[in-house]
Image 1 (cartoon, rainbow, N blue to C red):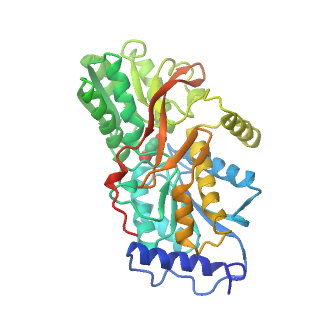
Image 2 (image 1 turned 90 degrees about the vertical axis):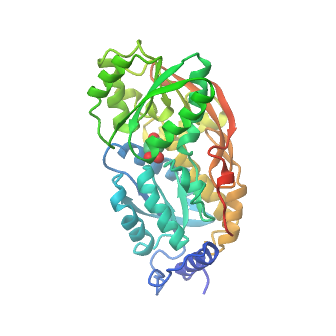
Image 3 (image 1 turned 60 degrees about the horizontal axis):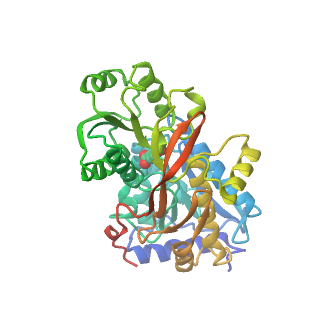
Length: 405
Ligand code: PHB
């Protein structure tokens, strides 16, 4: 049987090889017993993303970006038509392993793409390591996914949380800020974002005088904003995203802090939400691997195609989804769509140089993008790129990944 007549065969081979490579055990019960003729020849992509809750629009942008890349490749990957299975993960860590398990073993996808939330990502990484499924992370910055918990079959097209904030701490210190208060959600992403910022801010002579936390996805900021007003730090560092970021920016302004205590963050604070916040974000400076006005032909073409297709402006999440599509296309092209050729797919994905709207990037040894970080400033409805804050940043270092092959 070949992959065309028996689409399950390649997937089985991939899972078997993966399990052997990764040393994973429990394959029993997860392999499809009979390959279905229905959908023969198609590559099945599982999209496990948030489609409800505070990160809903992030999940939609990633989906749009991924599908645009497939559409631009003629609707095919490695010469094979593409079909999708979708699950709304609700940014709910408690349901993560179960949801991932279902999409891999019940829906029998060939590739697992997701997710946004680092807590949910933990459950997905667990299932990816157990089953060996080819897994692409299009957002969640969980550091361990590409360091301590790295694996040959796990790739990321976005960032590590601390990678996005390490440049910000340096920028803030260089501006001469001596004291800062951090404010974020208490979960893996918030903790890692603060750690990255704190690392470079303290190296630059700054001091974090207070860390303020809320449970995810709580947006009752009032008491904490009052505390910031009384602490009077030189600067505030924040990580919020999606609906929560929009609410935070509006509350910061309403509390009278805008223009008084400068606000900084990773670019998630201001990406994809500027239309919703009026002038509340004006002047906020952030660091991120994408921004407005990158002005390359590649970026312009992407933005035009995205706007035409979805009647929306793309944001960083759309770019990460798009790049997940580009990365998978590179992997499957190398094997002409034969998903069973795991080693070759992984090798092609490892050496792919992604010609991204954000600028070209390469894969670290831990399978996280080594990429430039821009300093951006909100001007009107744009996250205007001001400068490159750090070039080709690998952080936390991929050397923390000990991958057994
Ligand atoms: C995460 O949970 O890793 C996360 C979520 C939203 C972002 C960035 C990181 O915008």
